[in-house]
Structure formats: structure tokens, C-alpha cells
Amino acid sequence: MRALGDRRVRQTDGACFVEGIRAVCEALDAGLPFEAVLLCGERLRSTVALAAIERLRAAGVPCVDLPPSRFARLSDMDNPVGLAAIVRWAPGELADLAPPAPEDLYVVAEDLGDPGNLGTLLRTADGAGVAAVVVAGGGTDAGHRRCLRSSLGTAFRLPLVRADEPGEAIAWAGAAGVVTIGTSAHAAPSVWEAEVPEHTALAVVVGNEERGLRQETAAACDIAVRIPMLGSATSLNVAVATGIVLYELRRRRPPAAGRRP
Image (cartoon, rainbow, N blue to C red; front, side, top):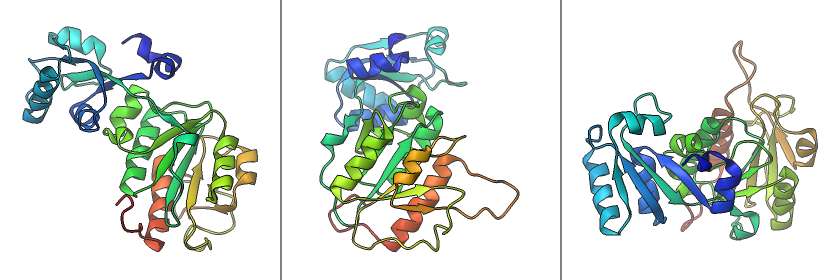
């Protein structure tokens, strides 16, 4: 578990530490292999969680019951619920993505620094029915425990891949016929006014929480849009901003039949 705090170990071993009832249950329902379950019977009262533990025990997964003090040392939650697991899972590669359909939406998240923001972004993208999320650059990774918890397990359901450099994601989009939409406070058209092509897959490209998109990434995008700021604040949380853009695009183009809802 200590080793899985290192992203290099997570990527090399293809494993992650998952904490929380919803996240563990999502990993189970997604059919992921479990290495071990860690629980605190004195804290755990959820019938859903207890049923999940019985399923895992029946499948031969080791389940270790820890006293509250021991479990609390493993957790980074203020009030641990008493359920965690080591799961075999890691994001895929760009080559793993299926060919895009005309109404598909994608997200490219560049250099995000906060794993909680990334997890919330994944949950938002899942709600908007995106075809996939690409986590690009040297920021946080999707296997971080806080990312997985913030995503409420949607990371295990959502097509999710990584790219070492944002340029790889932009190049993939160009080769696949996906129009890239960069987000910038300095863009001329607002997201409400911007003209985007119809019946063409689109990718919303968002950048680091403090710096925004790299200059070269912004220049490589096909379209740039901004979100109007009507109050005293000059920016929004990256996951909130991504959600606004995604839902505006989804309003204009409902998903095709048979695609993700």
C-alpha cells in the first residue's frame, strides 16, 4: 500500500489503492481483479458494502479486518467509512481508444495538479456521456487514491487513457478527425457563441488549475472558447469549467443511439 503512493509504481504494477464504499463497489461491478480488501468491521455498517465483501470473499479475495486505529492509519479520510481495497487497474493508452463517432465528446486534461480536481472532472465527464478522457502531461494521475475517491468510481467505468505529452493527444485527435476545443480566458468567442462543426467528434482541452493550457497546446487547438465571468471572480475550478463546456456541447448534440448515455 505504501508503494502504491508512488505513481511510477502504480503505472508499472497496474494497481491502485481504492477507498470508499462507492469506489470499491464500482471496481467490483466493473469486474476488476482485487488483490485484497481492507475493512474495519467496527466502522462498517453499510449493507451494500457488506454484500460486496461477501461477494469478494466468495471469489477468494483475501479480506483483512482491522481495528479502527489501524484502519485510520491507512486512510487519508477525516472520517473513514471502513472499506478499502487494492485493485488491479491502470489507465490505458491512446491506441486503445475506439474510433470516434460523429456525435462523440472527449476531454483532454493537461497537467492537472490536484487529484481531487481530476476525480471530479472524471465524474463530470461521465455525467456528460463523454466517449473517453485523456489525462496528458506530467501532473497528477488517475490512479491517485484521492482521484479515484473523488470520481466515485466512475474512473473504472469511463474509457480513460493517458498520454505522456499533450501534443500526443492533440495529434491523436487530428488523425482521428476529432476537432479540439481549447479553453482560455482570453478567447474571443464565449462557449455560448462559438461555432463548432456539426456531426464531428469534439474534444474539450483543459489545462492546469493555475496556468491554464500550455501555450503550444492552446495554439494547436482548432477552436478556442471562454466561459463568461459575470462576477468578481476571474476563473472557475477546472472541473466546473469543463462541465459547463461539455454540457453546452451536449445540449447542442445529444448522443447517438447506442453510444454512452
